Length: 93
Image 1 (cartoon, helix red, strand yellow):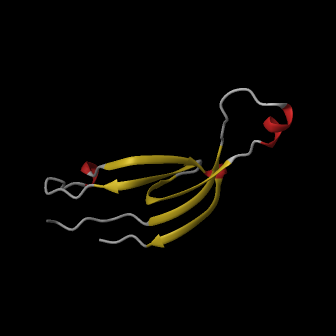
Image 2 (cartoon, rainbow, N blue to C red):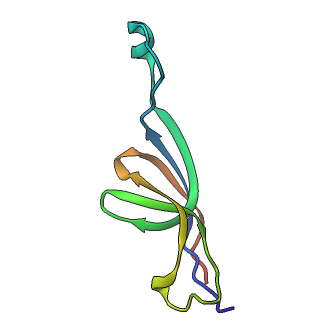
């Protein structure tokens, strides 16, 4: 099998909106906070307004061209929501 480039592996802490179900009293509604999320994955895009992580990438014999690479379970995270990013592993061949 031809060796493939693996993107950098990152841990990202970010905030997301959260919700409760049903009615809440004024005080309960005001105390509802945001969710702090930790995601770990291969960094496949870092744009001006977002980053994209993927949990899995496929290694298959028929993949000969970079444009044929496949990713699974991609998560796009708005950069304004990111609190902290830690690189866990450099890219490798």
